[in-house]
Image (cartoon, rainbow, N blue to C red):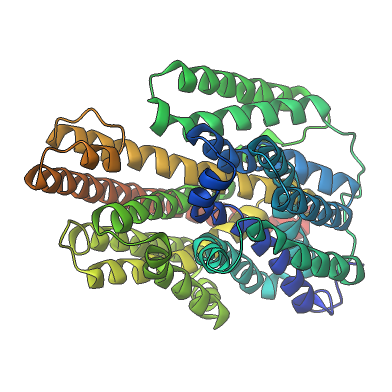
Length: 501
C-alpha cells in the first residue's frame, strides 16, 4: 500500500525528507566540480579537454538516461530503482574520490551519472505516490526547492571543502549521505510500480538515450567549438534523427516507453513549455552572472557564489514556510504561472539594467535575484504538479523522467542561447580574436583597451539578460493560456463522467 485513507502514506513527510536528501547529493554534483578545476589541473595534470569531459560526462549520461530510468522504475519498482541509484551513486563517488588519473575520474563521473538518472526520476515518482491531492503541491514545492539548493550550494560547499581538504573529498563526502539515505529508503519507502506489467521498450530506450545524449552534447559543445562547426552540427543531426526515430517508434509500438499522445494534452504541453523556459531563464542567467561577478567585477568563485546565494535562499524561504504552495492553491495554476514567470522576467531585467555593467550596483543584482527566486518558488511547483497530474499515476516514473529531461534541456538551452547573444554583442563592440574574456584581456595592449573589452563584455551580458527576460515572459503567457484551456476542457467533461460510469 502506498497511501493511507484520507491523506497519503502515514510516514510521507519523513520519506520526503529522505528522498530530498538523496536528490540534493545528486544535484550538488552538477556544480561542485567547477571550483575544483584549478586543483585538478595541477594535481592530475588535466588538460582543458579533460576538465570539460569531467564536467560533461556526468550531465551527458544523466540526461541521456532519464526517460529510460523513469520507464524502468515504473516497470520494476520505484523503491528498487531508487535504492539501486543510491548504491551506484555512492560507488561512483568512491571511485571518483580515489581516482589517480583523468581517465579514471571521467569514467567514475559517468558512473555517477547513471545513479543520478535513477535518483532524479524515482524521487519525484515516489512523491506522487505517497501524497494525496491536498498536499501534493506543497510536497512538490519542497522537492523542487532542493534543486535550487543543489544548484547554488555546489560552489559554496565545494569551496569550503577545498579550503580544508584535497579535491577528492568533494566526492567522498557523498558516501555517508548516500549510505544513510540508502538505509532509510530500504526501511521507509513503500514499493510502487505500474500494475499492468508492460513489456520493456528496448528499442525506444536505445533511441531516446542516443538522441538526448547527442542533443545535449551539441548544446554543451556549441560555445567552445562554434555553432556551425562539425563538432556541433554532427551530434546535433544525430540527436535530432535519433529523437525523430524515437517518436515514430513510440507511435507504433504496442508498449511505448513514452506515450506520444500525451502531447495532445494542452495541460501537458503548457507545463512542458513553461518548465523549459523557467529553467532556461534561471540556468542561462546564472551562467552569465557567474561570469559577470568573476570576470568583470573580479570576485573569487566562493565570493561569487555567496553573492548569488540570495536566489536560492529566497526559494527555500518561500517554500519551507509554505508561501509558494499557498499562492498556487489560492490563485490556481495558470495565474500562478503568469505571476511567477513575470517575476522571473522582472528579475532578469533588474539584473540587466540596475546590476549590470562594470559599475553596476550589487543592490540591483540583489533585487533581481530575489525577484527571480520569488518567481521560481511560485511557478516551478505549479508547473511540475501540472506536468505530473497530466500523466497517469502508473506512468509517474516516465513523468519524472520527462520533468528531469526538461530541466537538463532548458538549462543547456539557456546557456547556449543567452551565451550566443552575449558573444554576438561582444564581437560587435570590440574586434578581438580571443575565444574568452580572460584571453581577450590578457591580449589587450593597455589599460584603456582592457577597459573597453570589459565594458563590451558587460554590455553583452546586459543584452542577453534582456533577451532572456522577454523569452521567459512570453513563454509564461503561452503556458498559462494552454493550461487555462486544459482546465476548461476538464471542467466541461466533468459532469459527463458520472453518466459514463
